[in-house]
Amino acid sequence: MSDTTVDISAYFPVLLFICVGIAVGVLPQLLGRLLAPHRPDAEKLSQYECGFEAFGNARMQFSVKYYLVAILFILFDLEVVFLVPWAAALREVGMTGYLAVMVFLALVTVGFVYEWKKGAMDWE
Image (cartoon, rainbow, N blue to C red; front, side, top):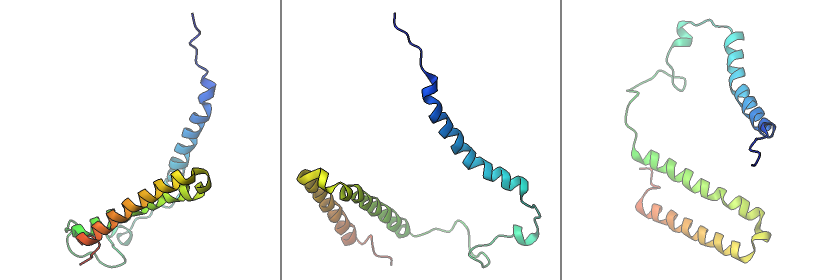
């Protein structure tokens, strides 16, 4: 028969990390709620937006172009992030790694040109 006991002390750092993370997220909010002065008035409770009175409906529609440009920015920004570890390890990856990244950059460039030709980058 084998001994199936688990050494729980090995998981203590993980438990400590979770507890510290929760404390960092919750304690400042609790301290702010308990220690901060709470004196609401009409000025503090009024609606504001960018320093001037709100206008129009809060549920007005935005152009799809706005979201498309935002998504494309995030997409291409994240693709560029993949270049940082590659550049840091360029000597270790050798020619195979270099060629793999060149293929990756070629695909990114083709995607970018396609989006540009389709008019996704036009703000009008």
